[in-house]
Length: 606
Image (cartoon, rainbow, N blue to C red):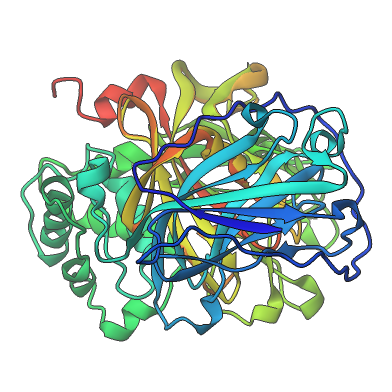
């Protein structure tokens, strides 16, 4: 049975207690059709379409459902059609997955968008106060036409007859859609204190990256010279001063772009490197010269040792960002371990040693110096070797879609990244050991979608803040940190789960990442600043960003013109990566070294 109840906008639902989840897994069942009981609709009479509505879906014979996914009946809010999408056996193994879906997305015009606040709940039939309810805000569009939770609740809890969720083989799911806003009435600056950026067609990747760069306040204080510098500084000024969404047309015009260029999506890493180069060139001869290098440049030493002859080689290299493997890596630290592991050069890959010819050798990389702002690109895409194409992971370029694999493996990233962990194993013996390499997560760029369609947005934590915000083009919404960290890790279809910490310690395990020549006086402990998320497949999609403001524990989602507050748990957990409906994965992580935070955010008085 399905029940719809129109509720006034100012009516607040009672906050529901969430039981402590126990671990457990359930094996997926065979896919087979099942006939559900017919549903009925009961609605309170209203003169106009409701602006807020509670929809109840009573799913009978739940254990007999063998379909991979199932939809509820369609319900309307303010004339717009919605439905609940459920994965009875889950996307994330061992968890029930629930989403809100735009029911008529296939018939809507090109470029459509909807912004809504909504909650999803599984009702506890023994005690309503123990029902599990989760709230979220999202900008729905043609690429991300459904949104919700891959790991809504453990299947072990749901199937436990003593807990009251599945009673007489009946599950009750609720959706409350409220505060619906059309695309033109939403004002991120007024509601969240942050302005969004307008999407010119396919510029979400640029919007996400610009929001992450803008939140690093060291950039942009000098007098502009040249069309690019002037356009970028004008853009940053409008982000700070304007109360409505901001256009990026002046900036793209300074690139020499034409209208059709704004409708062709580029890779966010590729654009990031171009942006850094342009900024570096524009700052030459000004008081800001060297700022980009100071912020983003790191250094590592490449060591080669021949096994059969007395020949060794070392080479120093610089980087502005690091590409980390996701496949086979559980989290950021596992990726760093893989980055510095010894590689054997043998067979067709033997090393050419001067005076000795081709030799078997060992090669490894250790870091001399990590930058204050550490940019990590997760290799979410790679060529399919079975198509006869060489492997090149991580770039979202316009190649043959049959030769590209999307890596949605679950991947974890921490809020704090300690690169001095385990005896500074990532550091070279020549590194400066006086520097503390503890980093804090600043932003997460997310890609949502598949290789031929998708969208970028960003989760960003304001400087020195514990709040996170989602920057999705012109929409800015507050985001739960748990969602940022957990929901975008990734799962299945090469979407392996991948974890990233809030703090990243690159001096762990005896500083094994550091070169013997590194400066060991520097503390390499980093804090997560931003997460860029990609939704889509390899050659198209949507980008958005999660960013934490300076000196804050709050996170925000920057999705083009929409800015929303985001829960930190969601930032850390939801974007590790999953399968199917939400191919929204963390694609780029930005960490800021703890010891440099005040300097980066211009809070040291200089």
